[in-house]
Amino acid sequence: MTELRVVVPDEIAERLASEAAERGTSPEDVAAEVLRTHALSRTGGHRLSFIGIGRSRSRDSIAERHEEIIRDHFADKTAADV
Image (cartoon, rainbow, N blue to C red; front, top):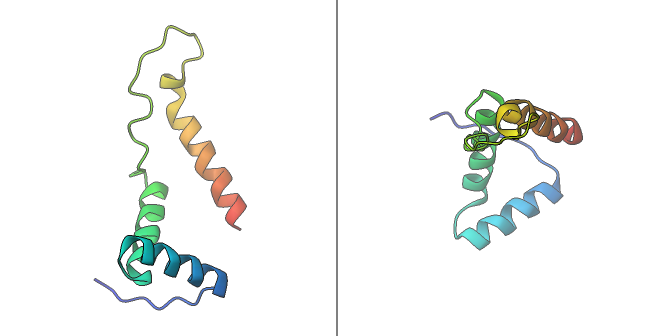
């Protein structure tokens, strides 16, 4: 593993500490999980891979458009973070 030092705003550090306290772990572990999840979602290993496994009789099936829906969802989240 590579150690990475990241400087974050106080608000983010407080949120990480709060989440870590709830989980009984360290803020560093929570931050590593957030970064890992984000990196996987951007490379196709997203955690919502179960979407689209259903079947629909509708012509505009969510099951058929799931990749587009997921891409749009994460694009909106990424744009909001910038």
